[in-house]
Length: 254
Image (cartoon, rainbow, N blue to C red; front, side):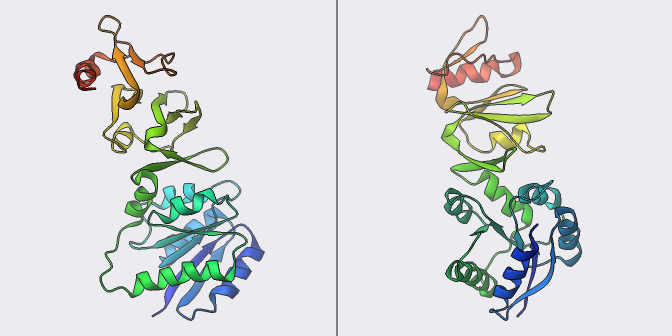
């Protein structure tokens, strides 16, 4: 069985090294490689590979942004291996999702772990295939953490770390504010329903604000202001009439 593989990496040398090293496994057949995200995107949609080795950070478009663009069009069951010189804290988080992760510069042993996992996955008769959209969602919406694109890459945020989410009409995006007062813009197509699906503790206060109910302290009946627990009680958050009744019921159960 041949496992059709595509590589997208902005470094020619990186591609050459990976092609050479993958040749150790006769099942891994590299059918194409590109150095630009745009050309790589066309290659994936044309060739519909089984495995994609994808650089996380490339000029003009990150690997995650490329995945957003092809989500819903790429072949079902395509395995994605993030392949990048990224800090080690990402490794376990990505491996706990449907993706795998290979750090540059990788060792022979590290590549072997990734390839053997791919081979085992394809050889399993009991494997249930999932679409790239489902796989991608599991990375972004997977249980205890979710990921947001930032101007420098990706931030993994614990569900409990998120204090609130605000929608910017100017930017047309949701942003998450964490317990450390960091603010991260979320991917462009993220909607309120996507955020609410991350945790049953997330509740909407208005069309442009969602809070983590774990931080909710009280609601003022006259002003409809939602007060959060210290030290976040300085945040100006108000409930709309549409959501006020639900929030008032919620505060009675906290």
